[in-house]
Length: 69
Image (cartoon, rainbow, N blue to C red; front, top):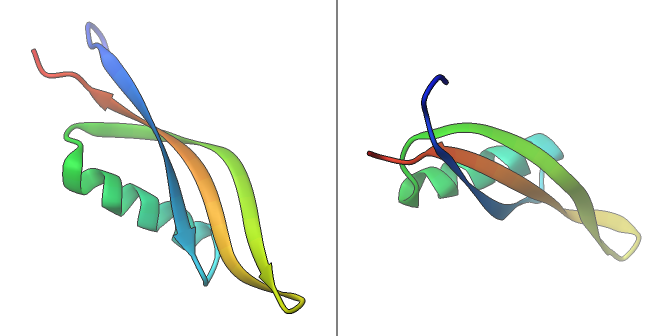
């Protein structure tokens, strides 16, 4: 990572399956529009409840990507 400049973008990944799937969905979607993704940080985990059960997971993720020179 020497001599690199990075930018951050905050996204929210979702999944009805799991937190892990929500993270993977968010990263996959971000990689379609952002280049040079290098790392991520999970900031917050939330869930949506429907009729007493977990309906969806919502994960706020910061992704870091290298700026092109």
